[in-house]
Length: 634
Ligand code: COA
Ligand code: AMP
Image (cartoon, rainbow, N blue to C red; front, side, top):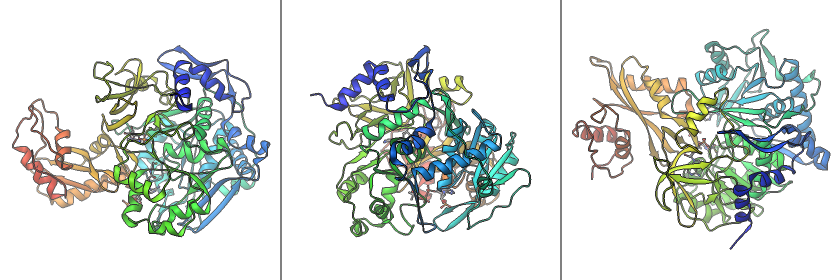
């Protein structure tokens, strides 16, 4: 029997131009598009070609003009600084226009890049929207990344200006950002013209004469800037994400398709309307933050929340319930790891009893596989639909979801339900042939991808094809493996590359291996994502030392751990490594990562037929047990 989801899905696949063309009418356009979908340069596709729009105008000015000026647009709730501050749509528009004026005054114009390296404060959102207002391209770098990661992004994006704050706050710890920024600029081959620094009261950053500009000073004298029409196909932002090497991939997002798709998802997927409060408990440095702290809710006219805190410890495991109740949150989006952290501290959800959650309608989880325990605990404690949805930095919004605003399907544990409209998800084998229902294979999406997904990688069309399009011609490779069952439910099982998800943060183990291999005493190494009760996965390193090294093994491990922290950042959560005599390999010399992984994850495994020397597996079992993991062979 048909339902609004089936109707929307079928139309989106059979007639994408009609489907998205109608949806696009909900946005403001300076000039309508000439063509909804341009497929004249396959495998590249462009949406709303010929159209002109401004994403910031649609997120702010339009609502002010339509009478929402006095409604809260953004609530900054910061338990770490004991602050709650609200901005109405009018106030946020004025702040954004002023900061856009600052950027203009610093010479930033259409197409110029601005890197934003900021904690979870309203100024981060203001800076992003200010870029959008004047057609500049922002690239937000997560505050937990180290200077080296920032330097890599500076070299690739070549920003005219970098915007930062004097510090971030991790529970009670002040993290000064300015030394990281200065270090990154020192390391980078490309140098920005200017840096704008937002000074926070708990840490004053020292300024470099001639290069650094004080946010408050600059805003005081700034002339507000108006929205600039940009082509629908012009980039709105670049967001770097882990690839299969230490070099991150610059995911590009356009203006038109992104604006159309995200606004529509607010009702179709999350079932919220203009005027509702929507909260994504993530960070503006991740894609979830871009799409659902900033753009989605504001485009829809919702109130969004910028939360500077953690699910536990700021001050306790009841903070999520306090925020939901105090700001009348209708839908919350976070990662399962946040709920695991809460459940660990308050397993009976006692702290929930102190709050009125009667207006709360649904919980959305993504970023990693949703484990059954967390799903059931959340369902039981909250008594609202708990919706697992699958997406990636590249896709910008959910590939699969139980689309609450269209039709709510029964939940199948372990499945993010069905492809969202626009996503023609298939499962193929290594020969690019469709497999039968229930059979595991590569999860791919038939081209074209819907609006809002990445049109390419920043200045790297070839890299885009190589990473996503070449392996399965005609499809986008998600690099996730899984299956679709008889009822059309999609199950996402595992990545097919070296990406791991640590507390919902995406990291490349290959990138960590590159760093460890730089240690003078390390001959070779393997880093694997091992199962972790709180974070889902954590990286663990296995190091083989050079012959003749007679230094303390503990010292070498400490140095190795510190190297990853220094170069990637604390967010890598790389805390455990062990020294082994050798790594298990095939006869052709390939490291048997899958086998090490199974040993560490306490999974049954068979001795691989291609193994060079089966004896080594005993050594590996001992090594993983030494660091607290492990299991005997079947
Ligand atoms: N700036 C500087 N450092 C940061 C940082 C930031 N923005 N974010 C995290 N870090 C640091 C942490 O302080 C921690 O440092 P430590 O090793 O010295 O303790 C390290 O990076 C790891 O951080 P995290 O993975 O967040 O672990 P945690 O133990 O501090 O918290 C959770 C665990 C589960 C509570 C936390 O990860 C969380 O709230 N996750 C929510 C999910 C989420 O936001 N996902 C994003 C995608 S939806
Ligand atoms: P990121 O780009 O950080 O959003 O990470 C994307 C990856 O996270 C995906 O390719 C998946 O491997 C994983 N992921 C995201 N959401 C889910 C989900 N709901 N279920 C299983 N895995 C997920």
